[in-house]
Length: 266
Image (cartoon, rainbow, N blue to C red):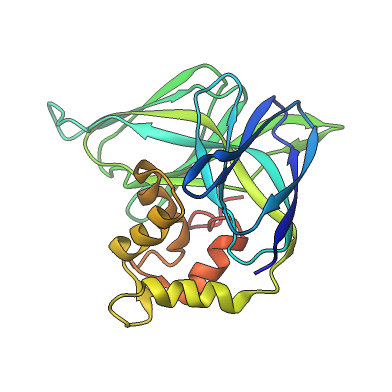
């Protein structure tokens, strides 16, 4: 493994961000930076202890965590604006109607697609506002959402990547869109793919060539990732949504963004 990792952090979210580079098992190994919009900073880090990167908007509490690729010798980490959602526990309605309320806490508009059993409907909720929709014959089963920025030079900017998708459970549900920070690694140099494969096989306790969520937990705990992040990171890595992580999914997950939602969304 290389002695040091060269890492450039670039803030492309359009808003000030905090970035914390975390060393495994030691708070003293952490390195924290505040980046203005479009700002960047270079770090030279100890590869032996480097664990993960957390980033968040200065107006929000931390963190949104991303595992740093094992065996990397250098990387450029682009921070981009994204979103997540928080759905209330769905309650039963008085009739067969489904009532969904979407609340947008992001600073820009959110364009989202509602997936029904055999169809879909596109909707828009403006920044800081909310919209309510009712469905009778068919109910929404899931939705995908992305940020919509104002046009520049007459060209619409939807920032389709990365995307967010979630299921809808219940008849009366409130879904809140919240801003978050996404990671995109460019100019990435691995050079140590075998180390990643060895890490995979080390925690593949059953030896069946896949990682269960429990086995994935072992890897994340070794990297000092908070348990609250485990389920979200497992879902990011499980690109084919079969509830298991294959070795290629594991390698790709360390290097690329999560998959986009189903359907021709954009």
